[in-house]
Length: 387
Ligand SMILES: Cc1cc2nc3c(=O)[nH]c(=O)nc-3n(C[C@H](O)[C@H](O)[C@H](O)COP(=O)(O)OP(=O)(O)OC[C@H]3O[C@@H](n4cnc5c(N)ncnc54)[C@H](O)[C@@H]3O)c2cc1C
Image (cartoon, rainbow, N blue to C red; front, side, top):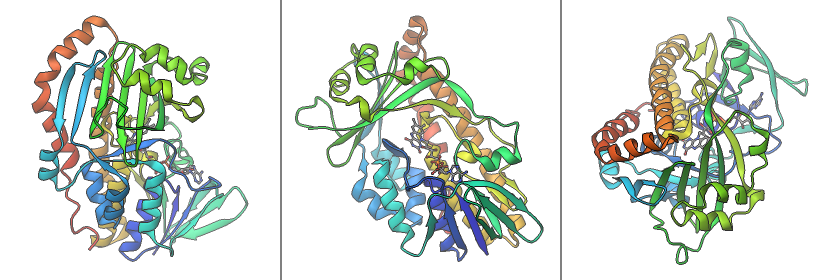
């Protein structure tokens, strides 16, 4: 059986690896001239780390990624609001969370894929047709390809999803985000390199995500109107005006950040869909369930999709049953995560002083809630699916 995969992002690459592991032929197409997973860093949850281990990418992931000792939430003055230790999580779920530079994750995935994978850049999918016998896909350069199933891993603005569900549009979450990765000298920065921190303040949210080999990934989120052209021009200096009074090392990092390396995006999500499969066409990753980044699970869910799709194809009596099972299982879990993530975003982005004071006072008592949330996120049984 041959799968045509549109999109060589995290979802598309992981799906190609997973499907090949169960004996399918795959070919991956991407519209970009060069492969690229986007910039900045990424937090990979324990669930997705286990999935990457099943894809054969575990050893390299730990070589180039960084595990954390704890995940903290602080107020803008630096008061500790919550502190989740990672060791009990790793023991319970059999994997650590890992932070990684996206460029390095691409190397990890390409190396797990091996040299035989067919991945073609500069191929923009423009349309497809399906029949009882198969799928045909056309590209902007006039070429076409035929196969048995089509995997739409073409991201939040998926053309394939737009063809199937023209009414479904990504929604703006109400906040906009800047990201950057900067080199740091840990001996001079007043910050523990084994701790991931989010600082929730009146002006917005600031995240500090240590990476391996002397780098830190930071992100800053501000409540804002959608597509504000003024914010698109923001430099690190402008961000320093918003976050300059936050605790160290935030002002210090913004001072040392070069504006040219800032990435800026409005935060979007996809309202949960009712199904992810349409005949021989499968929606996967952000094309199916783009979520806000507040739980660090967007890529994680794309990686889970890859294993679970391959697992159902491997263990179902027919391809139709396999795709039905994939859709049913993934719709439920990803919808729950999208809702949870939206709620966390709303709480983190509160900007009324009274609401912030109440939230901060309640935060230390939320330990049990956080543990329940993590249980849901990280507890997923993937073992044996690819065998
Ligand atoms: C600010 C921010 C922070 C985030 N942080 C995290 C995090 O810490 N942890 C986490 O797990 N997730 C995080 N995410 C989410 C994560 O980045 C995405 O969920 C993940 O990258 C989705 O992967 P994907 O392969 O589904 O889609 P994409 O990465 O969007 O890949 C889609 C690919 O399809 C290609 N493509 C699109 N259209 C076509 C076409 N017509 N023809 C051919 N190719 C096409 C594109 O070029 C692209 O390469 C974050 C997202 C944002 C915005």
